[in-house]
Length: 230
Image (cartoon, rainbow, N blue to C red; front, top):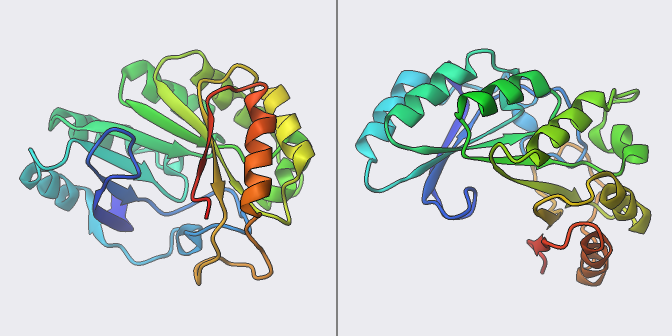
């Protein structure tokens, strides 16, 4: 398997774990605020392959205890499950980031017990989902099914939304709350502009707005918190 990036240590990407983060290329969404836009079409240069990753993990036993798999969209990779089996055989916990567009593959990983923690991006309320994901006419049914699977409690999970001033408002979070009422936990992440973001003209909401959106969401998801609020 081609791996497009490796962050060798992080205390942020995998809650409660000292982890590394593995970046896989390819994504079926085109979010205008994406921080990893160079990974979208999978054409970014390979940083290493799966065997090099496994050798790295073998050397890091005792220093790391988790591996976060992100993208892009990792579930586009049909060979993801074998890699996760190898990672777990080395004694590591696995966190999976996903946009929820491949519920069948997500369910297979959950059923096999290959994911210890899942983080699913929720782009917006259903009414503005396609716009925010950059995919006109997006079929939301697979995303809804992935959210339902996580809410059944087969593994620990979080939902999260990157909040962009031009794309989100109060109704966004009323809609998300109605959709995901009773979810375990939710994080609102403040958008940060970077050179890798594909579209200009996007801005972070104010801290005041972020706190307001969190209060709205807490009516349906009490464990709602903020990340990256300045």
